[in-house]
Image (cartoon, rainbow, N blue to C red; front, side):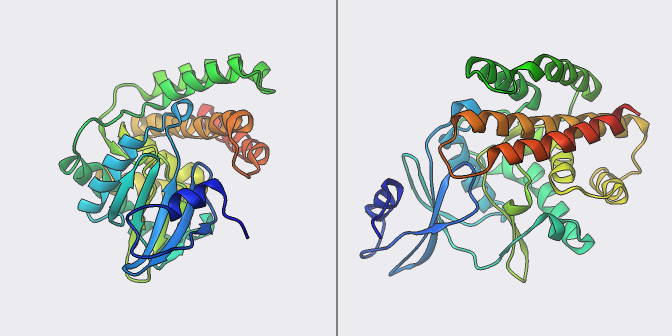
Length: 292
């Protein structure tokens, strides 16, 4: 079978010890990913350029990936060049949403998030982005209008809701967030849990990662209460619940608009329209609960 352009680019890297055959790795919805075996071992290769419309800049991903490895959260980056990131392969299970909802898994996941917030900044080098979800939402709305999205008639109402949610979040503490806590970004190797894929890493409120974990994986209310109480070391009061609920709405709205933008701009083979519909339904359901 002939190699596609990305595979050819990966195969041609001077990093390899001997000829290689990049094998496609399924699951990516932003990059093309491959596994490669050479004389030195097995590796994962992420291929993708900057995507400004999604706030993805590869210098930022690279810096966060190096720092995440130094903090003991993520596999080692062994090589990088323009649009390419090569990491050591980890033999493990990629989690599903159902896996994340297991209490035993959450008890391993939350410490990873806490270490991400507290430890990664100690290892960061060079410029790093901020990920403020409400800026992202406003920028997505501009992109959708400019691109003639089929969702255009919805945008005014969604941006009114975004302003409401931003006001409810209020002032925030700033940490280094992962900002994309999909189930597939956690791996369990049987001994420990790993947090991978730092495309959207950036300084943010800790509430975003907590809300993002909950909304992406549909955690139960009791699990959300445990999450907040354990992270903050105290039972959540009404004010914390209000700020967290607003960030849940923002997280789901961001995932929805991300998918709407991908519908008109992405060239990857993925059902973005279906993903939009799923996240829009989750957003509307969560927003109704937040407002009640």
